[in-house]
Image 1: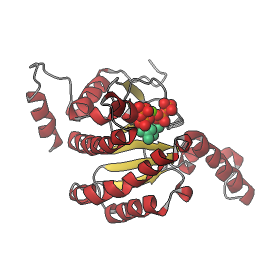
Image 2 (image 1 turned 120 degrees about the horizontal axis):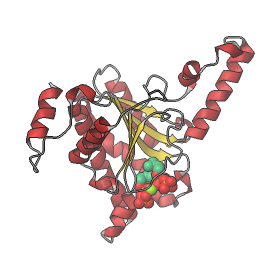
Image 3 (image 1 turned 180 degrees about the horizontal axis):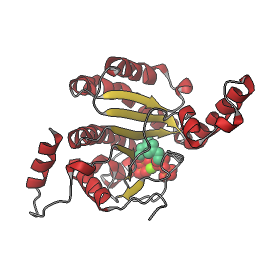
Length: 255
Ligand code: IPE
Ligand code: IPE
Ligand code: MG
């Protein structure tokens, strides 16, 4: 089915260029650092939170685009463990967005067979943030399509440190030996357990850094940076990123 969609997008290419998108080399997992909401709003003389509001619409566009391309996993960095440093009003606004997203989009996510997941420390999220997300997770648990993971109150260093603690505890309890600690078994104690490593990382807003996002998992991912701000992100940008991904040669240290 998605081959047809990919083809029809190619046919619509305005420059008449035959795009490189090959249906056989679609990244299985795309991770996204959604950045630039505040600057986008500022450009229009609007408060930063309007950028976040519009960023939510871009999440929907990115989800649909990934789904139609045949991507299996889409992981969205929505709030970092460092974002608590922001002004209280902005944090509160961000924390209220999931409820709005679930209220407006859950039906379509269910219809599209999308499975919603959460990554990050849930323990300090307010109930008004967590409860709607948990409803979305419950209602989509048996869906078999795109796996859409929100990284909320997520930070790699905490994730890795917590993983180390779990491993130490397992060794102390005798359920695992020191020799059994390998990159594979360690990957299983991370919050991303069950997700393959991202094939492609997208970051918007022109910043060229990872900002504590999936440091372990991105070891061999292809990185794609774009100057556009997250609220501007559209299907065309997703196609552009995937087209660039398909031009890359992944060597994993080999030849
Ligand atoms: C990304 O946009 C959203 C979050 C980090 C929550 P920003 O809010 O970081 O926007 P800029 O980078 O300040 O423009
Ligand atoms: C990264 O963006 C976090 C998210 C997109 C959720 P930031 O805006 O927080 O990153 P820095 O501070 O510019 O590195
Ligand atoms: Mg930012």
